[in-house]
Length: 263
Length: 324
Image 1 (cartoon, rainbow over the protein chains, first blue to last red):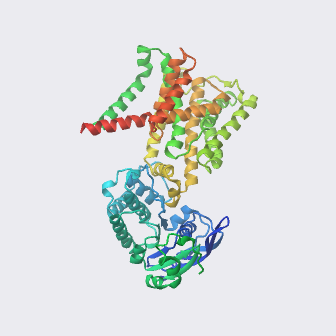
Image 2: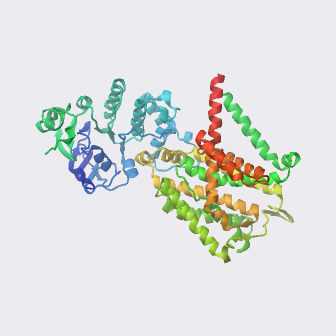
Image 3: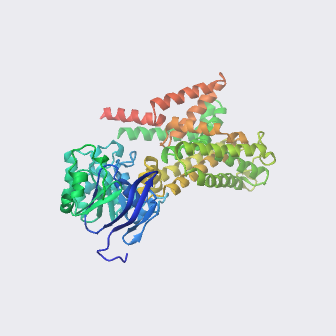
């Protein structure tokens, strides 16, 4: 809209979410500058996925506000937020398993238009069909176009999920552990795709693989126990004492989750 | 490509059979079977309504008989109490269940899985008991009988359900039209959106689909199919009765749809045909025909989760795979 070019693509103010007695997201205030690839890291249970759920409207927040491209989106329904231009993938890979790969992309691309005409054949929508072809090519899934999505390998499903996210032509893409459970070859392929996508789409990703995060992220935010521990460039994060103590330096220690962290 | 050829041949053969039933069947068997086939066609629409919800949107309704009953009563009350002609009465027999589906759907589609199944049963039970008690309007258990109005009149000539052949073709044409419309629907953006919700409603809302409205739309279309089925059945039987609103009728339609093949276009018709034929053949010799129905249903659900049509597809897949 009329937001200045360097205005944050996403701004979060004092966002809080409780689950019973547990504070999953604790008064989080964050800004994501445009044109930079952001990563959110943190131990399990730090509230990263909950934060995504709050941004995408999947969970209502208890307090706080979310602004996307200058527009407040707090409290909007997920499909409204999606149509404004925020796409996301889920931690547990989530596609339409009985539909073909091409149909998965087709419905994702078409859903953004809002109108679902029952009297026209899907094949008569040239623009949408062409977009599907493009995304299939771009992700190297063209050979699997007619295969049922549920029969794909884990790595291909993850790629399809990213494909679905981009066929919606979002302004902002939220990736929840995009390379979780992948083989090294699949990881390399997916990381290359994410880098490529980041040229045209704003990306925020949650990832556990530190090597990958420090390789591709421009900015890193560290979360622990629902709050933000640190935020900055990879160098700054790597040098941050609190982060090292709470997270990085104890990577071999299995029970780092238990460690109380004070920001 | 052999497989496509075989399936096309079967489709043409079935169509040819259905188009010649009024002459072919009395010649090789008995005229009685013509009306059995007509009945199968009518009930297959009720099964199709279950299938649209369960097979394509992922909602299992045990209450479709409610809309079937509203279709029946729309026609019977239209003809008998309001003295309407055939077409206005048919219109009422469609409008009443569609209106009911909108009202019931507004509440029901907020829920999924067993909660959805339960609320659909509750709705149909409420109106079943209402229909039983509102005797002056519905005739209660006895129902309402009516005299058939003519379908078309040209000068002195009349065509109507009084002619078994006309009745059969009217039903065949209606059912064929519905199946064709369903086929078009399933190949349309709306159909794909339905299937996306069936597969993954969380993801569906994340890609921007309004899951609530889409489920409501499907529920109303399903109400239309069930209602039309009931309206046709009223004209076919020349009466309406509250007993057709009981959830037992809904349950039968669920069995027909699942055994025939949920999520396939022709599954409901196949399932309905199988069970009505079992009933007609066995019930004259043995009163416990429901036992056979139950056994077949259990076997199919265990060994062919995608129903008879799914079984056929698997068979054709393996056969044509080995053929190459």
